[in-house]
Length: 187
Image (cartoon, rainbow, N blue to C red; front, top):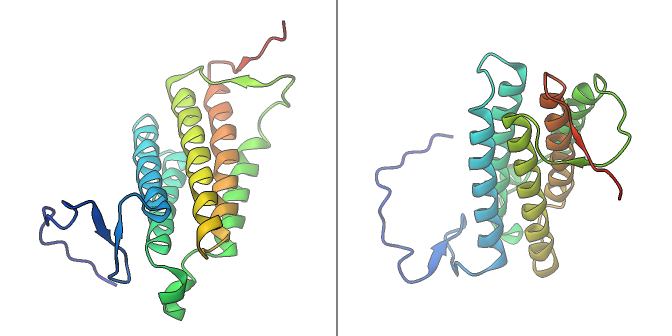
């Protein structure tokens, strides 16, 4: 499928409405549009994190794949379930969930077990990974709100939950490469 974008300024959203993938017009205040916006913010944050990782790094490649996955999620969400064509409905699959889990396990197996909760911080890349993790959590909460209002692809929720785990482990991975995790000290 090829996409062509001839112009960015359309003026179509000037009245507070936007178009969904099925062509319907909805308020920008809807839960569906909120999730799409949260995914966009999350994708931008992943891009920022990626800017702190060498391009040739396997992690950089994984982050780029995650950015594509987030775009796919947005494309899935922008089409209400009732209007999806069968071939487009399979964009977010169980295989993607397993892929995120495998990427997480691959990073985690090299890390020492934790002895306390981790405070966000450490290296710049680790701090950004924690920031991305919190944005995944917000997107997850927004998605649950949408899920309570409309029928959606529930695999997206599972993948968001796993992505939060991935970015937590990734932050630890970055801190394992020079700086240490900052552990919470109980008073």
